[in-house]
Every structure is written in structure tokens, then in C-alpha cells.
Image (cartoon, rainbow, N blue to C red; front, side):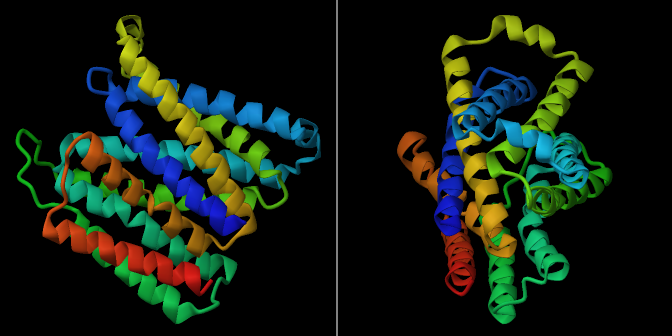
Length: 288
């Protein structure tokens, strides 16, 4: 079941990217993220009430609560560092470092949780993932970017925090119902998302939202909520070093929808990178 949940997480995550892209053509990305997080939070708590597990919040131990909060903070920190890196560096240099969080998570899960079953397969899979990610990033010339060595520091922090998000969530959600854990963690992310909007003074843009884009933002939020619920169910019941790479297969859904919706095609280099990512992920999933 946890493998199926991880697969659904990837599907909804891929769908999220497409819906989000449709919702931020005119809308500021920080504002869209904050609005989307509201939808995710409402969706998460709705699932908690439907599952009838809201009362279990009183049975939650302090350790679980602390690690869930830390996981939410790590997510917010990753977003802040990622967008800071993009603001001062070239996209084609920042993204590969940020995507390395997948490999970091696999290695941390092996070291911290002792997930050493079929270790050679996992290590080879991680290597294939890293190679695929490198090939998927097109080396395009980016105009108008600022040249500042600090981008590498922020990009690396983004990857580290993204990897810590999954590890901390695994610890925090161990003795907590997965829907409830997701709802609590999302609340922390919501606070950070709106803090970013307020700090940057972008709250005024809420008055001039495009209705069509707002609809896509809402749909994106629902897809994100579904993805997170499936993801943390898989994290709670499965093998982290396998769940995280499977979740990254959301790129398959994104590529497929991009082709049919936006008419975007992969280059040969990117295509082979995608193949390496799929092979590495499926190898770890099959031998888990």
C-alpha cells in the first residue's frame, strides 16, 4: 500500500506543477504559494475529520509534535533559500544543486534509519538519479541574472533543508496518524508562506487576482494536499530511501502534461536524463 501511496503522491505532485504554472502567469509566485497553502491546510484538516482522528491530537507526544514542526520549518526554510538563490544566480546552476536533495535524503535514510537492505542497489540507484538530474538540467543561457557567488550557498541550503524535511517528518510521524501529521506540518508551512508575503509587502496583490488563475491556484492546492497526504502515509509506513525517489517521479507526469498542454518537448539530453531517473527509482522500488 505504501508503494501505491508513493506513486499517487508522484502523480498529484506532477499535476500540481502544471496547475501551478497555469496559475502564476500573472500572479506573483509568493502570493500564489501562500494561497495554495491555505487550500492544502483546509484539505488536510478535512481529511483528518473524515478519518475521525482529530481526537488523537491529544495523544500526541511532545517529541512527535516537535519533529513535525521542525519538518514544516525545514520546508519553509528550503523555499526561502531556493528563491533567494534564484534571485541572485543562474537558474541552470541553482536547480541541479536543489534537486540533489533527493540523493541526500536517500543517503541520510540509510545512515539514520539503517535502511541498508539491498544497499548496493540503493547506492547505484542514487548514482543514476544524480546523473539523470544532471542531464535533465538544460544548460541554457539565462539573461539578466545577477552574478553573485552567494547563490551557491543558498542553493545548497535549499537542498539540505529539503532533505531534512523528509527525515524530520519520518521521525515526527512515526507515532502519529499520517493525515493529522500532514495537517499540523502544513499549518507551520502556512505561517512561513504568509510571512514571506508580508515581509516582501506583496499582500496588496491579493486585490487584483485574476479569477481564472485563482481557480488554477485552488486546483493546484487540492492536488498538493492529495500529494502530501499520500506522501506522508508512504513515509510513515514505508522505506524513506524508496518513497522519496518515487515521489520525484512526478517529473514523468509533469513532462507528459507539459507536452500535451504547453507543447514543450524534451531534448535528447533531457530524455536520457529522464530515463536514468526512472531506471534508478524503479530499481530501488523493486528491490525494496
